[in-house]
Image (cartoon, rainbow, N blue to C red; front, top):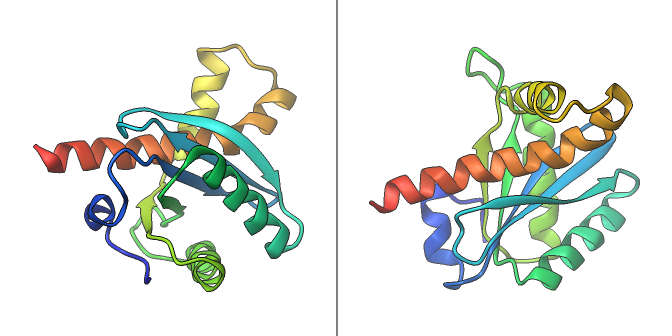
Length: 157
């Protein structure tokens, strides 16, 4: 299955199956999951980057444990709307996942997600700098997935 447009994703995923969301950082992969109604995104785990196969295995374990039927990957588009090396890396990650498992994958523009999460963790939760660094990718995955879920709900109206 190729990467699909976000609005096509619900038609390719069984009703009641959650969606997973990813924030691909330089050293970690933040993972989030939606509830069965696809209304709320929650951060679930931070996968430390090592070998792609190990990362993919852990991601698939998390998806299988929660019955996730599709994946939303944050796409780090530049502020001017162009795609750079990080976007190419995210697209390559998706292609490599598809070689291991046939599943619907969509991208979501993640501009400013890490900055927004950092700001939220600083102000709202009074999280220390060290702890914040640990939480950002996981929380950013939830931020990305929540944005996609909100878009899907808006399109369904």
